[in-house]
Length: 454
Image (cartoon, rainbow, N blue to C red; front, side, top):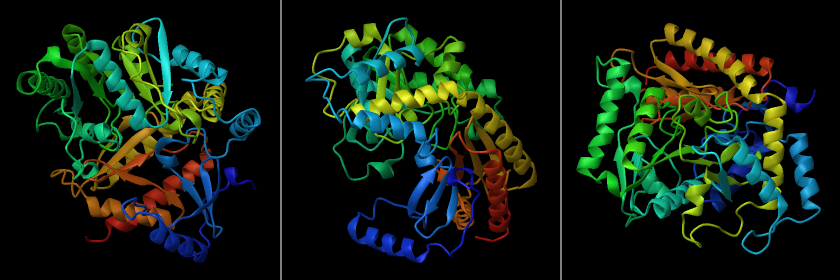
């Protein structure tokens, strides 16, 4: 049986002898602050499955943290990259034009749902770079110095992006920090003020946002409001559509650009190509969208798309870079988008999501330690608590579940401002049999670990 059709199978205690030796070498050669909690060293990957150096087979529900929506080692991606590699690896767009960049920009302009009819796209290498460039573009176009971001936000680890990121563990001790970044409270409905209806909670969070104009930066100095349509590291918390509509209205009234950070949410994960497609249907499309992760199936690439008027209104020289829109990455990305559209991976995401949500909601009713199940499409989070009444974050339990699941062949990852959420980011090419197997391993880990007192 091919690896892509296999089910999880652990044949040695983890880590196995070969993995143990490589992990020891890692500790000597690589900074310890680049953490890894999984006792696994990958040998090869196909679809949603990986085999480690000791022959253990794992189902991967992390997918490089949202990078592998079309799975590991897709044969058509391999062929597309191989074909491009035989022509040239690289052509820098500031020096010469390569057609792959142009073709991919044309395709992104066709599919990315930003406000406006005519669009343009630029490419860089990572999610943080895309976010930083989106901010630079907004500032240059509006000629305003400030931006607003949110509690729970994660935008990357470069200097500006780490300041935009809420969790200060990601930027401790690396100041002085860039100025002009102000923070409002994100609409985390599970932890909204007690007794509020959803409508009251949304009004409360909009009022909190408006207070930033009074207490931190007047609206006329704000270039952009940067929002993750579903917060990633913040705990897979979706932005409620009624809140987004209110933010869009506020931006229009104040001349502020609405920037969607779709680094983790993009490329079919949500059941549409982008979560912003849902926003567009509700008449609140963003002005700028930053994308990355699954765009090129694992080759570093990211993009910023906006209406042409915005790109045409910025100063020369502030955007660009050596490797942005690398030829191999563009070839891979064009094939990724073709596969997503041809193989109906948006529809598949909704099928997977329906099956998982049914299971997760059943577990929520069954286990006192599951407080909330949320998300959009195949970007779902399960929040673990000590009990449903107190909602006190159950961090040790989540850590134990992640370890127990890995020991039985399922790779899952924690998230959340308290690290008490388990995220679901399975490749969209996962088979039904693999999905069933993963759900069994996951629930068994919840049962085993919740029986232990921490």
